[in-house]
Length: 80
Image (cartoon, rainbow, N blue to C red; front, side):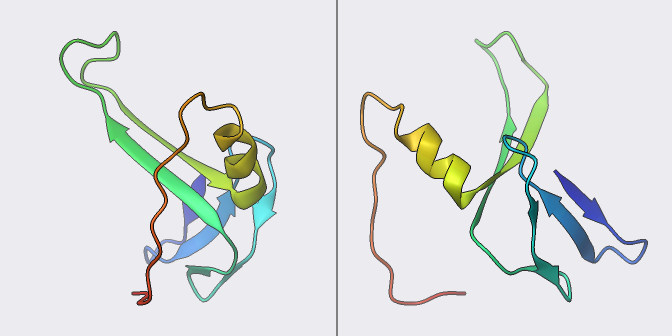
């Protein structure tokens, strides 16, 4: 869950799974977080809905541990 200041700057990020408040400084998250924004479309029961949530790194690791098929992981050398 994200909260923004009136000027649009990121103020708060809270993990939707465990409720942990993540470190935010000067509008930038200062620890690992996964942001998911998904627009559901045809052939789903959520057609036309947009779902968004944040997971801290610990909750992300727990969710990944439940997968029957492992997530694809690639290494990168440049960070934007």
